[in-house]
Length: 299
Image (cartoon, rainbow, N blue to C red; front, side, top):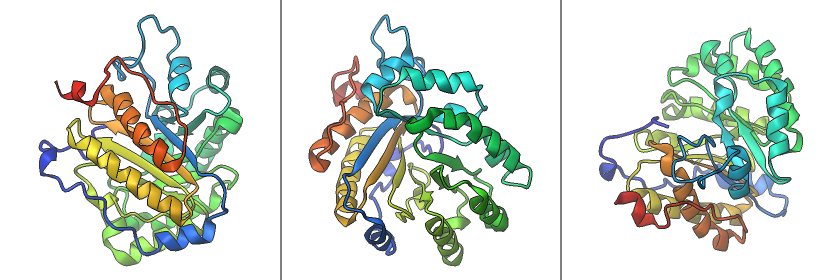
């Protein structure tokens, strides 16, 4: 993931901003005193992208990946709608408690930009995506950088159309969605009223996307490391914030690890899970890698 990449990450202030004032309110209203569900994964399972992750001789990448992680942020579905048998194979290859968090096809978000013709496409997407059955996590819709608030009515129509049996998270990237307070509040309340998640993106060059506003009882976080030593301190800060949110009532953590160069995402994920497990009382598997220490990444 190159979004938000900078040449000198050491110059960026990666401090996680304070919570939006409405985030504790949302968590207090939606908490159900259940066990916190924690899912941590990468964006893809492709061997070429995740160099040093797969043992030599691995025959099926998804089978191995799902033995190490409990979820995947499925970016492949952004580029095309796969045939039904592909989703059925994915379902069959993964363990009982594994979940897929697929990205909505770009025909909806980027090519047609939520116009009146996207609904047939969305229905077709959901028809095959639903074949993941109970392994289907939250679907996420990422809008183009230049999709701004002038398209507000399109957003409203799409949100109201979306079948509520499918959890949805939305990611907005145009600066004006967050820098204009009136616009931001309208967006947050629309998502909140429809029980949809507001995606948080932690990337070096777009700190404005760290609005820290949850709109339901779900923290859907897309973390983009900078292939820099600071990546690890940033993850420690996220552990601290997630623990604080859990105390406020957060019950669903969906955390996806990217890097500008994805090859070491599993190592970064392992570090995060190792720190997170004792703090949240979770028992996620710590993914294995042929790299064995943080220092190996920067040699």
